[in-house]
Length: 112
Image (cartoon, rainbow, N blue to C red):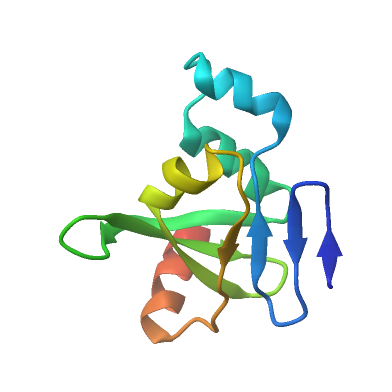
């Protein structure tokens, strides 16, 4: 593994496994924090950030692109996984890929 934290594992191939920290779970249940806030905080620990706009993954779900500044890789997250997996206290695997030309435009616009 490349980098390991209590709630984050980054593998040699760039894939990430993440989960919400226990201290934030109570805040989620009481609506003190939103799930998007918590995932942003968790990803920030690895220099990963949401970039671009949200988009449709299917007729039933939306997603977003996450950029890993450390390894220059991107991930697609399904927003339903945030509520169904992470907010339930389970691990979520994000699969890495090398940014293509379109991704690179979005990343460069985000950096500007």
